[in-house]
Length: 358
Figure 1 (cartoon, rainbow, N blue to C red):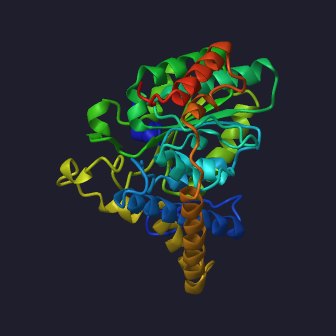
Figure 2: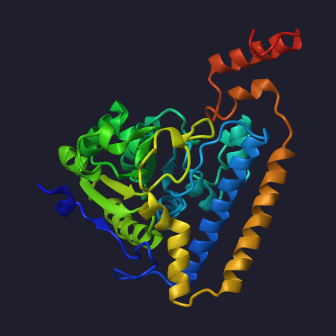
């Protein structure tokens, strides 16, 4: 089997902004809105990096380069579909309505960041690598048992595919034939380990063969290709085709987190093609080539993004500090008796003058 032939990368717009596939079902208005989202989120991500360097937030995991692989998926989902994200998946949560100041709150250690708005059916951003993949299978299985017309979608990086949770999740999803889509964002690096060092298969998508589920590869930097792929895929999964594994081929433009220095392990790597084809620059070239947006339009969007992000920073930094005992909140819809008792004991400990470490 030739994986490159069996699992080709689906692409609509190439890195130079040229149409190389059929742009069906995507209006100019949608592309404009996609670009607005890409610019806004890129501005937020870059601002967050600077805030961490200024000591105004804690450790932060940048997502620059992976925005299209998330927004293109989110735009195809229904308001009731479950989302199971990782710590680098704030773009999908923002697109679905989570306030833009939440990623900043998360890096400030504020517990409110774990309280996704009730109208958004999403679990909190997961820090434990690959844990959310199993959660997505459980949610999809529950939806199937209750005959609900909803699917679950989970996002994770290429490094997560080396975890046992990933394989257990695919196996269970396949056996039970639950409506779940696994979105592996292959950003080429699992922290400092290149993808070819952590697995011996040329593609992530081909791992679908072992579990008898559908495997697809798509250019994760091409938002048009991602959107088209998922418009079709989510419909099939919703109708009972079973789970699917999607490899969104993308690139992590920056560090793994603000605690990481990629110059120590990317030495000698020529990533120019990846950087040239990153989502924001690629879509901008296409919109320019097709005269869909003018230079003044781009400038206006840049200014709007800055205003929106400035407001998010202002909101996050003005957020009231929560009492330490709120760490027990937002874990369950209703606290278990054990957690109620622990919360009370912790609050009493603090009122007696104890610290949060004792």
